[in-house]
Image (cartoon, rainbow, N blue to C red; front, side, top):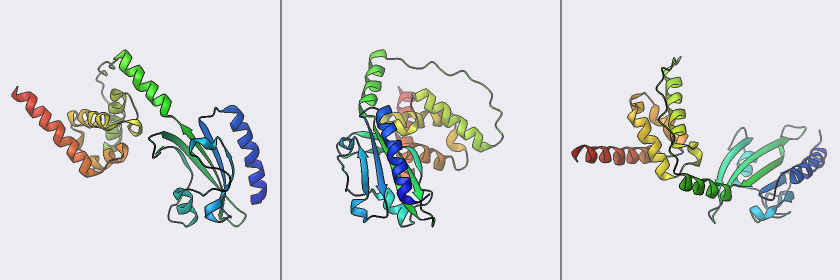
Length: 219
């Protein structure tokens, strides 16, 4: 399909999405054949990021165009705006007849209010999930076992790692440390990737946790 035809088709998709979703969803169409400072050719609910038709593309699109990032399509990734708002985003790239990236359709959902509501409800309910029942796991590899512990720890905290704040990440590391997870080869790398932190930060968390444990034992 020619790029101009793709754009017209995607504008119809945008019409449907705009009617289906509420005004917390921004929908953006980029024509990446244009100069990069004016790639936006259509945008709905632009108040989310303050952009308009004729504005610039993002750093992500720039890296896709210039080949410094591969496999551009991304779904449900989190972005933090300078004013503190949090977006959940997805971006899909379309290529022209020569295989060159030419069009991008992006969606950004402002989830700041729902996250605040989630935190408020947690504060009101003061609900702590019960201790998960111990069960035997017949893992086929040490990697599967590590993934099991990571998933269980996220369930205990009550959030996916991508949504956790610092104290919740420390709690997740504490739960993993209790299970001896960091004795598993290369577990640190996997935990850091899941939590979106550096090894240095992970080691700081472990020092805090183990210092607290030592203090409790002395009391």
